[in-house]
Length: 220
Image (cartoon, rainbow, N blue to C red):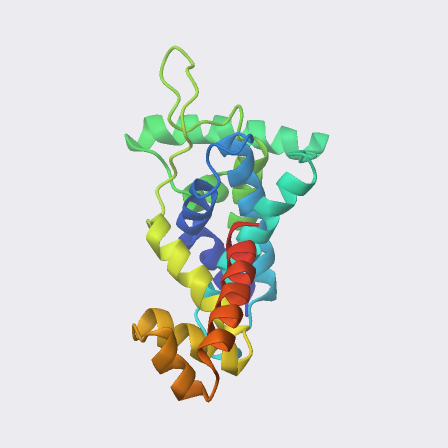
C-alpha cells in the first residue's frame, strides 16, 4: 500500500475511533484520552493492513483500535507525549485556527496537513497528542468540548457489529456454528444439539463458555 492510500485510510476512518472510544465512556478515563489511544491504534492498523487478504479495512482496524484503548486501562490511563509532538500539536492548532477563519468552516485533517507541509498521518497524530488543548469545537470562553473533525461518520452499532464479526471469525468452526445456530438462526438448545451431534447439556455448557470468552474479548 502506498503512503497516500495509508494516509487516506487514517483520515477516512477517524469515525471508527470515535465509535470505539464511545463504548468505554464512564469507566474512569477521559474520552479525549481514549480517542488519542484509539488514533494510535488506527495508525497501527493502517500500517499493518493487507488489502490482499480479502477483508475490509474496518474489519481489521476495529480490534486494533479497541486493543489500544484497552491498553490504557491496563496501564492506568497514561499516554506519554514527547516535547516534539507537543510543539507540532501547537502548530496544528494555530494552522487550524487560521484555516477556519479563511475557509469559514472547520478544516479537514488533509487541509491542515497541506498547510503545514505534513503528512496526513502526522497531522492526525498531532491532533490526538494535543487533545486536551486542541479542542476544535472550543467556544470563545475556552470551554473544552469533544473534538469534532470533519470525517466520515461511524456509529457505535457499526463498531459493535464489526468487532463481533472479527471475534467470531477467530473462533473454532464448531463454536462459531453453535453461536450462529443459537443467536442468528434462533434455534433452541435442543435443535442446536441435534444439528451439531451434541447433547443439550453439552450445548448449554459450551455456549456459556463461548459467551464468556466473547464478552471478555469485546469489552476487555
